[in-house]
Length: 175
Image 1 (cartoon, one colour):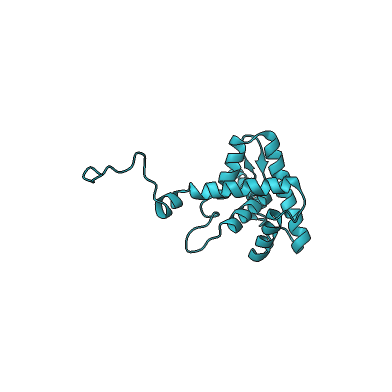
Image 2 (image 1 turned 90 degrees about the vertical axis):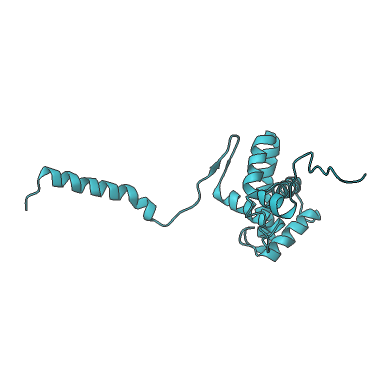
């Protein structure tokens, strides 16, 4: 069997491309880290924050906080509008949320069911779980989730229709 140079180079290119693409076929796919200006959030932190926002404003007949992108809004607001110490406190509280969930349910916050998540958040809100960072994190996350939802396109077009200032003009109305 004789192989000419073109065939050898073609086969070498196929093998090289296969070796380069082989890691993509391993099945271990996770979202890449979210890189913002002042910090980086890994996939687990994004999913935990996403589960927290979905627990605070769940999906019913109307879209919940997860569907309106509240977790990304929180991270962007934290990146743009918070100090370095507030950011560190937020991420320490995020870790403490998972630790508190492991103590109460035996698993992470993501693995907990909806009712278990509500119980964890109720315990944090009632100060039954110690930790200043955890309470600060929960307060900030709750406040920003509500702000995100009430300023979302869905809320301002379907729930509370936003009208630009100065509003409508009623010229023929008796005063």
